[in-house]
Image (cartoon, rainbow over all chains, first blue to last red):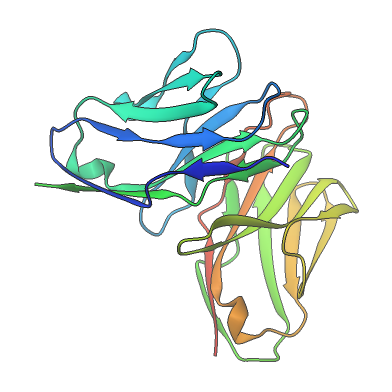
Length: 114
Length: 114
């Protein structure tokens, strides 16, 4: 069965610093990959997704992620973070064979300090 | 604008009560999901439905049931609420037609069972 590992449960950074949130998944078959963001007391919102093609995916709010098939990773990056990026970030992968279900990581709480 | 709504943002119930959580989507999506979210555990799938009157167990169905009588509405039922069901409950939907299964989330219901 699919699994997703988010290597850091909490990441504190200073405003305008770069950030990388790490995500590894278990599958060796073709998958779809997603990053979601959850602001305090809200539901999840899609940041970006990888379906196929270019391994560098750009999303909303200046975030991007790179799909690395050999390392089964899909790390999320932003070159300069803002206070408003403080949120929890979830990596997700489609189920085996591209099923309707998504498997989520446990989340990474990003805190941007002034 | 796509929308998934949940009947309550906050709910307080007593142990042993029957609890209904309602979710409605306006996107004509075939698939609907119920998750619970707990700190450090990420999102865990309780049940999902891929069509009216169809349902499938997720990873943690014990103590829950669901109902889908209309395409746009998916209800989560706690037959006899217990304190260990205190959690954030998130509803999501996705489209079979997209082939990608990107999920759209509601704002969540924070349920407290006392």
